[in-house]
Image (cartoon, rainbow, N blue to C red):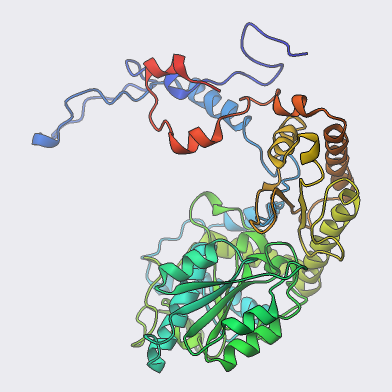
Length: 501
């Protein structure tokens, strides 16, 4: 039964209001003297109060601490988001990135004052190339989709150098690829041609062959794919697209499933981005921009964007200008240094055998959950092993009135962030679970026990109870469709009373 309290708090979990309700624009926590010598701004001068809520220091501190307690985090528990790889970030990485010389760098410093940082970037590039078996790398892309764009622009530049850009406008994208792949291809100026999947959840090779022609620029394939499955025909696909005159872009977002075990360059890949937060344990975004380096084959390496690091003797230099025909720059400066430091620290602390174990443990954990949950949830491609994530759907629950969204909301009451829902789109009512390699068997069992209990409840005709969940979360079930279509982006005092859950 729900317990109501006078304070609005629930035990040690303190009530948190909006900062506009906590604060008051008529007061301030700090008194500052009036600025001297400030000229009038004319038409730009403010005509009305700014309405910024004023709080004292302890009030501001408590507000954000209480707010943080409403948020789920990897430091609280297992984060089962499929295709996102929400794994533990070792504190060693955080200690190293805060060292003097890394934490206080400025992108406009003279290169003679940043030799250590440039050497670190060069080492990171070396190991990325060694692990992937590729010929060139661009460190500067800021995220996975940014890296995809970088790779496709390199393919575009290569086609232009061959004089075939006008003819080759079609990019083949399997339905099992990440959703950003077709979007990136369109953003790069190409036309997307969808390739179907077979009954195993992999690319239909015969259908792929029918899409080939002299107007194909590239294939964008995710491997392991979004269903958590390795593409066994990947080398055949690479050979076929090369024979047709196109290039092979591999979405490397799931590289953590094969790092240390498979070199994408050996599979015929021409370009692949690497999400450092997924494979090499840097935080998602890192408090700012992320990092999605792109590795290139010999055929595309010379089209990589600036800046490039060059070593001459004992000195490292940044080459800021590209040769004619290259991609150009992907961002204002050199990328996200904090991500480079964290990723290299992770690589060096694990070593070759440790990185291989990362992939092995990620696959082992996912298959363990697949084995435990398959008797209770339908696994559309569960006839064989999966890679780093296990895919289920709600087909055996819908007859009992329970859907994927209901399982997700019930997980909130159990203290878990839900798994990825309704993705990949090729599976109706999908539930994509990625436990990652950093979870122990005890934690996997705890999550599996909860999921099994929910499945049994659902099959026990308890649909009404599911529809009422979550009951214990700070907010009840929202009208998500209305929230997406009619978002309230600005808080107004008179609107507070009308706010609905």
